[in-house]
Length: 247
Image 1 (cartoon, one colour):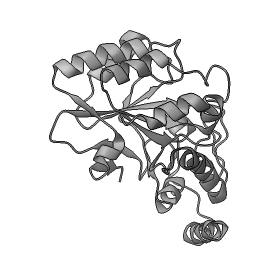
Image 2 (cartoon, one colour):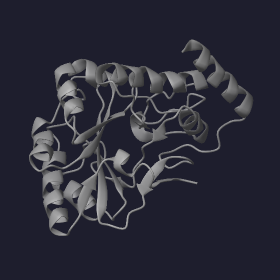
Image 3 (cartoon, helix red, strand yellow):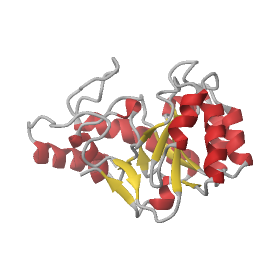
Image 4 (tube, one colour):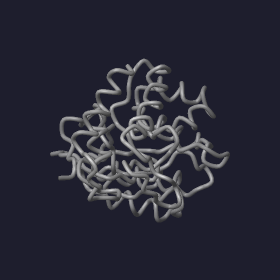
C-alpha cells in the first residue's frame, strides 16, 4: 500500500513538475457534470459533510421519503459524518437504493498548492490530495466491503492537477450540473424550482445533513412533478459508462 502510494506520488511529481495549476473551480477539466441518456433520467446526489453538530445532522424524513417512493440516489458522505452517525451509515450502505460515494476525509477543496475557497484551506500537495481521498475511501471500504468509485470534495472545488491525480487513482470526480440547494441554504420553493427545471442527463447537488433547511420539502415537491412528467432517477454508478467529464 505504501509502495503504491509512493509510486503514485513520484509519478505525479515527475509529470507535473513545478508547474502551477491553470484551473480552479467547480467545473474544471475531468470533473463529471452530466451523463448521456436517451430517456428522461436525472441523478440525485446528496452530500453529508460533518465536522460540527449542525453539519453532522441527518434528515431522516428526506431519506425516508426516498425509500418509501423507491427513489435511488448517490450519497456523498464525509468521514466525519460517518463517525458521528455510524449506525445510520450502516443502514444507508445496506440499502440497495443508495450508492455510497466519497465526500472526503476533512472536507477540503482539492488542490495541489493549498488554494482555498470560502475560507476553507485546500489540500497543499499531491500527497494531501491522495490522503483526502483515500483515508475516507478506506474507511468506507472497511465498513461496506466496497471501495467508492465517486468522489466529491468539500466545497466541490478543484484544480485540474488534483482531478488528474484522482482519476489516475481510479476515482471519478462527481460534479454537478444543477445546484439544487446551495449548501442547504435555498428555500423549499427554490429547491423545487432548481430540480424541476433540470434536463435529462443532469446531476443535481443536494444535502441530506440539514433537516432544518428547505431541501426536504423542495425535493419532495420536485420529485412528484418530475415523476408525472415521465422522469426516472438513477445512481451515478448506473450510468458510469455514459458519464461526461469536462474537457
